[in-house]
Amino acid sequence: MTEASAGRFQGLSQGLSQGLSQGLSRELLEGLSEHALAGAPHEQDWRHTRLRACLEQGLPLVPEPFKALAEETGLSVGEVRALIGYWQHSGLIKRVGLVVRHRSLGLTANAMVVWNLPDERVDEVGRRLASEPQVTLCYQRLRRPDWPYNLYCMIHGVRRERVEAQITALIQRHALEHVEHQILFSRRAYCQRGGRFTPEMP
Amino acid sequence: MTSDGLVACLDDVDRRLLDRYQRGLPLVERPYAAMAESLGVTEQALIERLTRLTEMGIIGRVGAVFNHRQAGASELVAVSVPDHRREAVAAIISACPGVNHNYWREHRYNLWFVVTAPDDTSLELRLTRLEAQLHTPLLRLPMVQSFHIDLAFALPWTELEDA
Image 1 (spheres, rainbow over the protein chains, first blue to last red):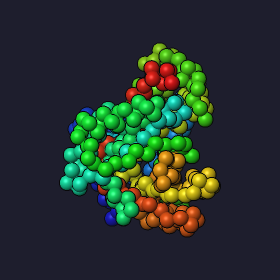
Image 2 (tube, rainbow over the protein chains, first blue to last red):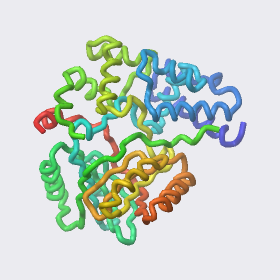
Image 3 (cartoon, chains in turn red, green):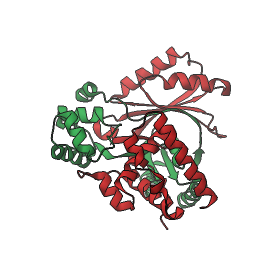
Image 4 (spheres, each protein chain N blue to C red):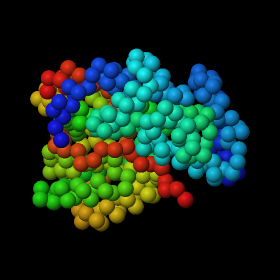
């Protein structure tokens, strides 16, 4: 076992015992027994990588999608389900379910608001904006020489006027009147798809 | 594409499906059967609904959403291009490996997109190549910290219907 795969193995085992202690279904985690992790480490890694690639692209719409993924990846059905459960538990996967395309549904008024906040206020304002139900994304990014903004928040709405009113209300509620900001509404989405994080297969 | 009429095509079961299962897909042998049961339809009917929602473009997929920061590297990028070049440049960006969304926004920086990659090195490579292809400097905006990222929010059905 290489050092990297040994580390991964240890991480996985720790994650599993944590998962059990935190009440993740035993049946689910059993799929990831040591037996499941036996075999050439590299082959093991690539089967996991293949599974991640499949999950990025979506589950097949057949009665037993995990069985289909098992056939695709060379893992067992139990391993597939246990890995997905484990990845959700560890935070690698945020959620599994229907990925809505908001624009096709009519949520076309998408505003990105960028703020130029004093660095010492970013944490506090970021957390407060993030707790507003209409704010769907909120994060801090690096400033650039001709781009002074360090805090970003996104509002997805149906009507532009309503979103503008929501932004005005946010500014008042959080006393941001004197913070330089810009509102960038989207006009069109040229493409919208999931991220592609898995490396090319050998 | 306008969304006229699309929402009207979604019945009560479709809406409950979209409300209930943007997260928490059951990790059981037959997940669609379990979802179907909770919505009071058959497994076959549920699979047909998911297929129809995908074909309509209402959902992109039934799948996993990965945490960008743990899954690999990603970066928000903006470029400023003259209007007459916008469509052509947007097409090049959309075709770039790892680009997961690409928006035209109302600003001098008019194209905004996110590039994803397995690691920092391949992200760097993708961005360097793209910059050379576009002959336009990229405004690269790496994330410092995330306060909230959740696109699985409750859908405003009434507002969507009135639109």
